[in-house]
Image 1 (cartoon, rainbow, N blue to C red):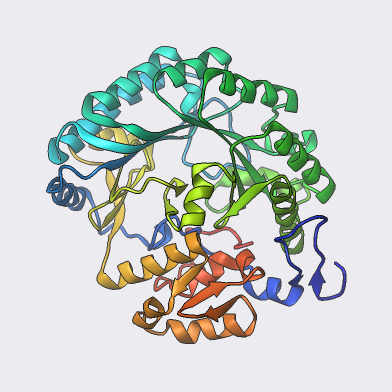
Image 2 (cartoon, rainbow, N blue to C red; image 1 turned 180 degrees about the vertical axis):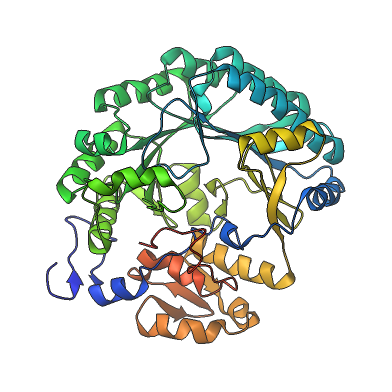
Length: 463
């Protein structure tokens, strides 16, 4: 710190302002990531299979409207100690064959209501570890999808991949299947941090994997990194950021580590390591911002960075950026169809999540029912708040007319204005450079479902 109350800037940054320590203490509280509104933490089990079917029936009316499709592949061969995803650890690849059988049944249920052959403008494979599958399994998965949907010629097709498992042959195979973008989970490139979190992948191996993806012809390469991990220090993380810049991905997603051992018990194994606190997390975040923006990347929304020529940066500049469960996107679709264990969808005003237990998901689909375990039906008030929150998350501003439509919001924004996190600019409330670090907290001012005290579903710190 440069004083008792101010966190000093990192070198070379044009976007990272000083952040008073009292603001960090006041506002860096747990908050949702707002990939949806209401956030998943506020959903209930009052929404089930029948609700999802009704939502699909409503979506079926507009048969020409393109869809987004998300497929969750939960299997991983190793347990990473930092992981907060819904995963299944197994070395039995036959588990994926059984899973694909059931996935085909689930998509048959969906298209039985929605209609077969609907156009898909965005396809995302997430996990887990989607590239856990072998060549035949991945080809079968793609066949399951294209037999039931029609991929648009310019569809945004993306796959997440573990660089430890991604061979040159596998990447070439994924590209041949039609995937245009690949996202590698790097997390950190420091050996000591990697050993602490149980994910050892040397820089040279990651470099070879990134080059293999380029050689395979992927149009976009994304690297995911995390700040706030155990054993991270400013010096180590700065070296990692320098290495990321040297790898020259098209996009970088830089997430704050969510330490939620009550929800993910395996994270308790990290207690023996040094964990960055609030001020240290902010310093690490600013090192990432500093290093990436100095290298020419555009800082987008909350936690993404993209080359200025990338479609994500272009969409941000043009005010065409969108946000859904997969993060920031350039290709919106009114309905997001999600399939697989724990998958989350958004269809015709109904937010839904599948069973997060593998056996429970299998059992539901086997009986010919959707595996919806919880969700939320959007009200008109929800839609207004959702519009405001997504405007903040994507455009760093919200129209005054929208603020005035949401009861009590003006009063909740007043202290944020006083503390310099937002200011009024014409007919909009605009996030300030300091306020950008507290974007999730600002968005929470529009949230009608306070969940920060719900110990059953803990959230990560907002900074």
